[in-house]
Every structure is written in structure tokens, then in C-alpha cells.
Length: 394
Image (cartoon, rainbow, N blue to C red; front, side, top):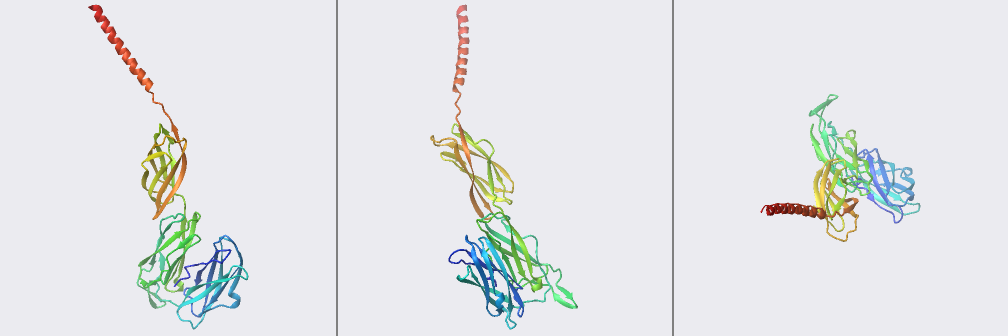
């Protein structure tokens, strides 16, 4: 069905970079002999504004639209802004169930080039007498639970037929309680892209039965931290059984923090450096490791592997350091790297730069030598006294 849920990326020759999509249409499918509302969304993803943006809808049979309602003038559309407009189309009474098409035309500036994109809309009156109701069971499962900018992952849904018996009687007429999912789609938000297309059901869900649906999701690298809402929509047994849910998705760039837990100091070119490693991300991170880098310094271990870390978990590590270059000028930069995984996404980042100090400690050998010489004098003096007394007696 929905090529319309795969939005167009299109740009004019100069100026704004416009992205055109069908946000939604209702009812689904478009009913024969009835009106259908279509919401067209235009986003400006470029760095320049669209000075005089116009949008019009050119439908093909079985759809039609009056001339006065076919075009809207949006005017100025600044960068990182979007405009949504509703168009009312009429579905011809002689239409057959199937797929109909409409074209969305848009013009960036008055007198400029018109660009177009074709979208498909389902046509029909697919209704069933089944009375089963599809419900979203529990909370959608996200992997990872909290995304970082640039991450890819999945969102999984469990849809359940809430009926508890196989038949139900309404107005002395008996109906089965099977449920149907004619289609199920997940629509992204700004900076959140859904790579999985629309699910089209092929059968029924019996009372108490369920179906699991999984969608692949990608977060753009430049997506700011925050909570974004994705639209999860299903078409059920009939229009009265359609459902729409807003699904929150959290983006949080916080990760691993590495903090020295004592002075970063070498003595006579060597020493042990101690750090506290904390996971400040809202969910568990795996394969966490820490590496140190400083010119002319050798570290052991070269990479300290920690493994999995729960949120707010603190781990203390010790890394031995040894100067292997006599020309090092202290203090010197100590660069701290952290590698980790959020879900299946590998991250490697520089988490800090510190100053490594050096202290030269002189060996106190003169004191030891003095003590040894003093002991020798004492012992030697005692031996001489004993020897003298022995000679005097003789």
C-alpha cells in the first residue's frame, strides 16, 4: 500500500531543500463515493528560505478536487520549518477497490519551476463483521532503550486481540470475535527515520492471540537530546476499529565519564594512575573500555576492558604508566578515550584531556651509607676494646 509513507527528498536547483510527504489520510482506505482528507507536509531542510512556496494537489481517477481547493499558497518557509495543509478529495462512486494515485506539486518561488511527486492511496470499503478488537499490549520494546544521536535500533510492538470468547451476540445477531490488522505503520519524527515499510496483515487474530511487529529506526547524527513521538497507526477490521498511538522515543547523548580519583603524577618516570569510570547514560552500556594516550608514555594495560555497566554504575580502574622518552616536557597532555556499545551501536570518543605531572625523587642512599659506616665503627670500636683488654691481661 503505502509508498506515501516513504517521503520524497527533493530540492529545487537553488535555495531551500524541500522534503514533501503525505503525513496521513483519513479514512483508510478512502471510501468509494465519499470524501477523503489528505494532509500534505512540506519541510525545508536547507539553509535558505523558500520565499513564496505554493503547493497543489493533482489527483487521478478515481479522485477529484475542486479548483479552488486544489492549491494553497504557504508563502515564506524558513529553514528547519515545516508546513502541513489538508486537502479534501472526492472518491468517485464508480471507483473499484484498489490503489489510486495523486500528484503533489510544489513551487519554491513565484514563477519558478514546479516539482512533483506521486503518492498512492488505498481505495475501497474493506470492512468485516468480526468484532474482535486489536489492542497494544504493554509498552513497546526498544533496543536500545534510549538512543544516542547516530544510533540505529528497533521498536517492537505486540498487538493482541482483547476478546475472551469466540462469538458475541449483538442485537440478536451472532458475530465472531476474530480481529484483523489490514495495515500497521510507524511514522518517524524530525531527526527520527523509520526504515521499515507498512505491515499488511494476511489473516485473522483469534481471541487472546497476538502478533509481534518490529520496525527498524535510525536517529540522525545531529538530532538534539529530547523525547520524540512516533505515530503508530493500524487499520483494523473496519474504520471504527482503527487505532493511532503516539510512541515516545528518547534521545540522550550522555555516555561514559572517566574521572581521575587521585593525582595524575609520575615519580621518577613511572607510576600508577587511578580513575573512576561512570556510566551516566540512562540504560546499560556494554563492551566499555578505557584507553590512555600521551606522547612518550607507555601504558599497561594498553586498553582497560570493563565490560557491561548499568546506569549510574561506578568502576575504579588502575593503569600503570612509564615514561619511555627522556625528552618529555612535563606537565604533558593525557588524552582519555572510551569505547562502548549502546545496543548494537559501537561508539568511540575522546572523553577528556588532563595534565600528567612528574616528580623527581632522589634516592636517599647517603643516609643508608652513614648508618652502615656508623655500625661498622661501633662494631670495630668494640672489637678493639676487647682486644686491648686481652693484651693488658697478658
